[in-house]
Image (cartoon, rainbow, N blue to C red; front, side, top):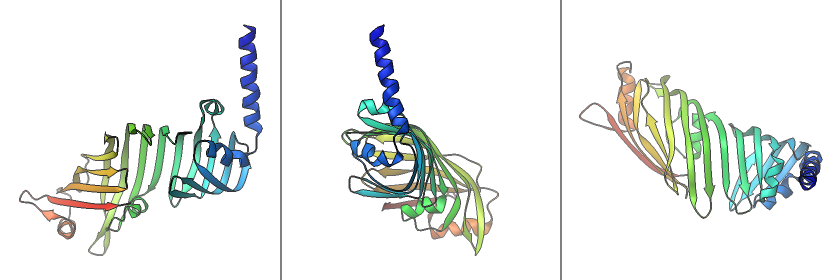
Length: 254
């Protein structure tokens, strides 16, 4: 019983140190997990703090963050990694919140991760050729990835609201769309469209490879509420079929 008391007291002592350590120590903690972080205008403590700008480097990739508010899970440090509750993260029109963990081997996992953005911002990363608009929310209930094994767990979905693009010089809203997210292999992410009541229904999927390439194989199905101009615009991006639908295929690299 006395040994347990000492162990609890030690944990409380270490957690207190973490809670009161300055947030400027965050780069040192991140480096222990194989991630290099450069921070500006840091406030708060290592346990709970905020920054107004950051550059994050992992492997050969750099990410630039406009703002970040976090809460560290102190006990995660005992496992040789770091777990952060992202309370508010923003970068280039994209916002993020949720729990994300990194370990010393470069593996990443997370729960209840929510990313919101404009559709145009997200598709610009994929160099998608069409000028589109709308709101997008990516919700990941759980994911688990490692450099050696790839994706082990991936569960989530994407909601797109008021998806729109230009038709005859006018902005036309097609409606809402939804995609389920899964991992058909350790190196691939699949986004599969679920039927909705949009003016142009979408079927098919987008396959994203972790090497940075992607392929989209979709079927556009005009609904009764679709205007003739909207339906006619599909022939500029897809191939018409005998059943009145349009086939669309596109591939690229992020």
